[in-house]
Amino acid sequence: MRVLYSILYALAFFLGSPYWLVRGMVNRNFLRTMKARILGPGRILPKMSGVPRIWVWALSLGEVLSARKLVATLLESKVEVVISATTQTGLAIARSLWPTLVVLPSPLDFRMSTRNFVKQVEPDFLILVETDIWPRILEELKKRSIPASLVSARLSPRSYRNYKLIKPFWSKVLSNFETIAVQSQEDLEKFENLGVAPERMLVTGNLKFDVDPFDFGPNAREALLEKTGWPDGRYILLGSSHPGEESLILSIFKGLAEVHPLLRLIIAPRDVPKFEKVWELINQSFPGRAGRRSMPSTDDKEALVFLLDTLGELANFYSLADLAIIGKSFPGRHEGGGHNPLEAAISGCPVITGPQVHNFKWVYKALVKAGGALVTDSQKLSGLMASLLNDPLKLKEMGEKGRNFVLANRGSVAKTLEFIRPPKGQ
Image (cartoon, rainbow, N blue to C red; front, side, top):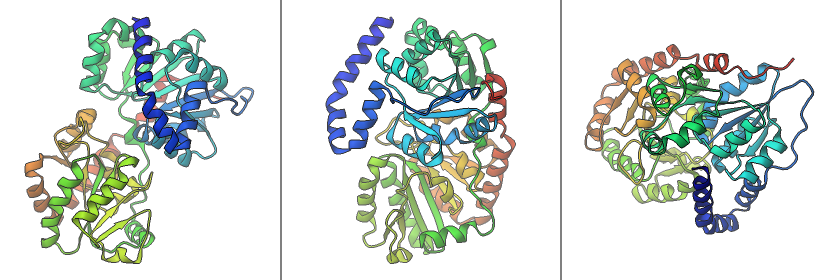
């Protein structure tokens, strides 16, 4: 099975190489990143005597953001932390969050790539955040007796089905983790069904609960409006949107804006490459009434719809919003699964989501039960939004219940680190 995996992985890389080359010619930074992922990062800072080097691997934007509190807590224990991310967005956010730390592209899962990375980085412990499980890197670490832990672990229905198809292979892969800290009891049962011993797992919750909120004090909203130059009023925020959802919300917003003249809409696409397409879509729907966060203008005071096309700011803007719609949850040109609603909830912002939230199944179920979120479909979305906008007391109540829910479930970082026990400095 290992040989078959290697062949299929190499074949997938070969078939995708024309795309990588074209993208590399357009974006030289991407080409440099791919070189590092294949050959290794080269020389980095030498290890300090008596100071363990913890490698934190986060896939992309969501995992990087959820690792903020984890990394801060690790640094307090006098260790050195090296961050790696797989996507360009993840790398950009990681470098902005931790400018003094070493941030590297995660290696591809070729034997040469994983060997070079481990040899050059010399980690003493790997903490893999949520997903992005690759067999070769775990084998390389095991061979060198370097412990690895999977934290805030979850398995989507699709991943779980795929893993079960070749259970013996993935059971062996997962056995390379010394410990697995899972988000929920359901995730624990999935990993156990794949052959992971129960004594190597613990339900520690979702790291995203421990992310420190933006300052949502009494002057935060005014400060944000002053910083952006945007008009005062009521704001709807479509966060982490995917193709198909922007047009749905823009269509609904047209009708709502006629009834609520002070209403504004913020759209924050999940993927950087989609910024330009969404900007075109906004301008088609509201010509002359659109603003762009990355390009402030004196005309923004008259705008109705704003594109949030900067990285790492979405959490801040939930404090500005009266209502949040969380993307990747309504039918569109994507597989669904949902995105993190907790940044909105901790800011006291009521949440609406579509039905496709299986990547955050437990979180949404609990948040809805607590009264901080509502689930609906595309057909009922317009009516629900209109009803809530007509009921400010309901919005305030939902916001308070959502924030209290997040505060009541904090503590995942402490539970996780107590369970996985990474080495500490002297």
